Length: 217
Image 1 (cartoon, rainbow, N blue to C red):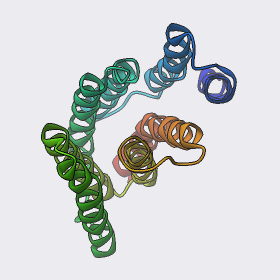
Image 2: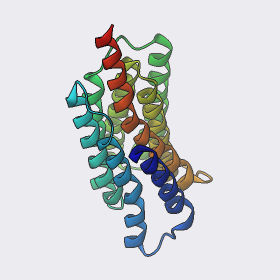
Image 3: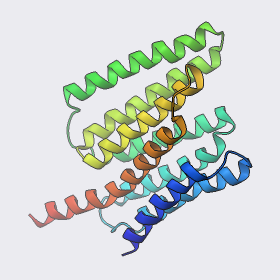
């Protein structure tokens, strides 16, 4: 019951923020940006308890850190570092439910993506003498690749799709900020970002259901 109500509220508040809230004043924009994430955290709390509880705890912690990063991203480097911490927490969470090796095709795609983004983004920043930013971008790419790599190893479709959406969101944001203007950048970034976080929260119940089924066999 509560999960359905929260799901509807998340979708509604996300649409309101993305399409109806103006960029100014910034305080109002940040407030409405955080509301969907707060609802996603509540959604995660309402997922059925089970083992390992550490997975649910880490996912909720990751959601909370990413919510902080949503507000801090207006101070870009601070926000970037906070998102980096969020990704690291998700890496630890996914490793708790790791099942098998990453498929070869997924590993190849992630490595190709990392190479292209490193050359394109970090190379551009380096050529513009933005050395610190270039190094920060390389580090961030390495971490999100690791997050995606561990997501595929879980074998959980919600985690895998969520991680893919998160990588897509970060990529559009970075390309728009450092390379070229991306049409409908705000909608693309936030729709994929909220979708990723919701799927991470939803993966809690899918994982616990699988755990119970295995115990019953």
